[in-house]
Image (tube, rainbow, N blue to C red; front, side, top):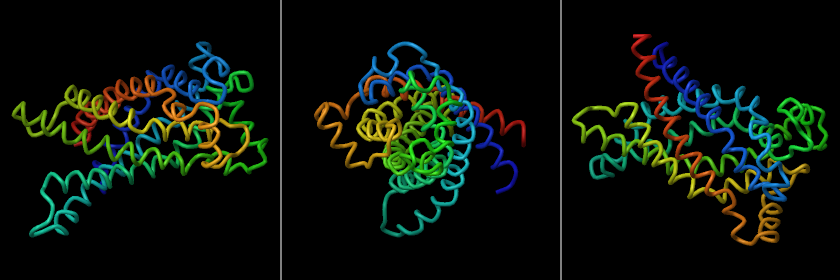
Length: 283
């Protein structure tokens, strides 16, 4: 990739990630506290909703940049391959596009999680354990001191596999739907590409549907990250069923759907707008 294709997703993705995380951070805090052990008020209630924002500021731009860099690169290179594999009597063009977006978005999430998971661990422990950690720095220090005894690397990447387990289904739903809605919006307006406003609406719809659908996976991921001691996925699953039954897996579905639906509008709207602006500056 030459300088132009690299700069566009790097700069645009960084801007989109930072704007979204900062703007919607309080809703994310409320969602985390609803999902954590003990429930909403035991984990801070309505107070300190920006506690942990430092880790979000540090991680937002590089994680989003990595995602979009991988996503755009994969889209460009996978579509011709998938299209050729299915000729002459293979899938339709629309199906090939959907398969491409699913694969590209999954690759993007795996790349982004190398940055996102450590910052999520620090952020969510600060959000949920307000009595113990009053800042991102104090939560990070506890991990670096290996207070849990699991090791620094394992501590920082606790919940990595569960995060991937959540993110891939989420993104497999969101991005094919988002790209399809963009194509429909552009065609209806008689243009080749959707503009930033259309991208924002499409991102909101796609994000809300994906967020609601994958809430149970998000609950599991949050519980694993915020527990003081390391727990397996099976242990967390059993704990949730024991405490709340199956309804426990839908804790925070309202704030999560609202946050990601609104966040999707900002995230993908800012990305489309920034991509156009950056492209015009570097060409």
